[in-house]
Length: 235
Image (tube, rainbow, N blue to C red; front, side, top):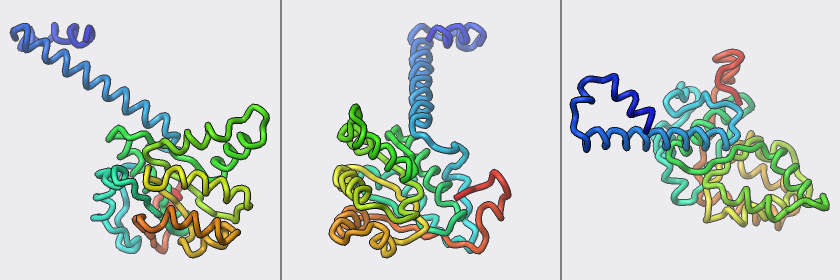
C-alpha cells in the first residue's frame, strides 16, 4: 500500500481524488498484489517441470483428435470441485505432460493446491518413508492425499512391485471421492491391470480411478518434438 501510495503521487488525476476514492484504489492494489503473490507461490510449489503450457496455447491440430469443448470444461476446474479424475493417454511425445500442466496451471489460477509428480518419484518418496527409521510413511501419504489436484506423470510406464501397488492403493483410497487426480499414461486402463500385478489390488485401484474419470486420448502421427523441435510441446 505504501508503494501504491507513492505511485499515486505521480498521477495528477488520482491526486485530485477524495480520500475515500484514493483509499479504495490502495486497497484494490494491495489485494491484487496479495493474489498475484499467492498465485506465484502455488505455481512454484506445484513442482511443474515447465510453466510454459497454458489452456490458450494447446495444439488442436485435427490429427490429435482433442475435444476442445471437453478441455475448455476441464479448464473451469469443475472436475476438481466434483472430485473427478482425468486420464490423459497417448504415445510418448504426444503432449500429455503439456496438457496436464496446462490444466494444473489453470487450477492454480483458481487457487487450488496442485502438485505435479512422476510416478517413479512418488514411489521413491513412499518407499524411503516406509523403510527409513526416521521416515514417516503416513505423513507422506497425508501430504499427497491433501492436494486439491495431484498430477501423476509416467503413470504405470513399467510394471510395479506388489509393495508399490499397495502404496498406490493406499494413496488412491485417500483421494477417491475426496480429491481430483490427473493420470498421464502411454497405456489405457486395460493395460494397467497387468502392470499392477496382484488382481485384487489392481481391481481395487482401478475401481477408485476409472469410473468417474474423464478420458482424453491424444492421437497424432507426429510427436510434439517433431512438430515444434527441441523445446516445443513435450510428452
